[in-house]
Amino acid sequence: MSLGGSVKIFLDTANLREIEEAASWGVLSGVTTNPSLMAREEGADFQETIQAITRLVDGPISAETVSEDADGMVKEGKTYAAWHPNVIVKVPATLEGLKAVARLKDEGIRTNVTLCFNANQALLAARAGAFVVSPFVGRLDDISESGIELIQEIADVFAMDREIETQILAASIRHPRHILEVAKAGADIATCPFKVLVQSMKHPLTDKGIDMFLDDWRRREAVQVASAGTS
Image 1 (cartoon, rainbow, N blue to C red):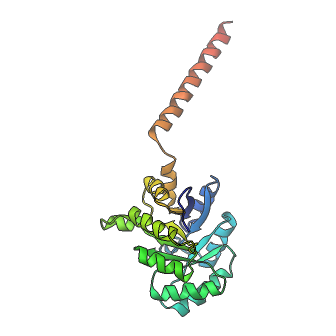
Image 2: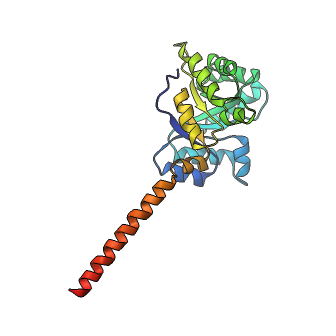
């Protein structure tokens, strides 16, 4: 059940270099992948990539099924789950997806129900036994609906039922402000592209302050060198 508070940071990518770099910052709690992200990594083997990610990040790693029917999703899900205990099976917010979630839960396999665009989808996914649900913030904003309001609505619905333990994973994060907004709205997790995490640590006044400190230090050293030369 989501109660708001501190939000965990996941990286949304299948690029091992990005994951290794972000992991070195000490902020990553997990990774999400999808077929589109995998397709960008030309020549990469899916299983090898997922297993490599589990060695870089000690947390949930979402691997998405591509079947459209529950039987196919369950078959793929069992295969993925056998790769590593941290693998979370990602299925779409469809009726077939719900069937797969319920069956995989009975097998002790955790699921991430993705492509959630309304609170009903999230509620039914939670009832089916999803470990996390993934509402897409940016894609709703793209069609002039509020992704942040959806996060809040799901959080409110989940908070009304103490039996719901499903976490809210805010996806389709487009900019650093989204991270703060979904955290305040009640998301448990924000999964972000690498560039958004980089942007989150950028501010012109930080750069200006560093330049000022370094300039002052260099001037101090120059004065000391000049003083030593005249003594």
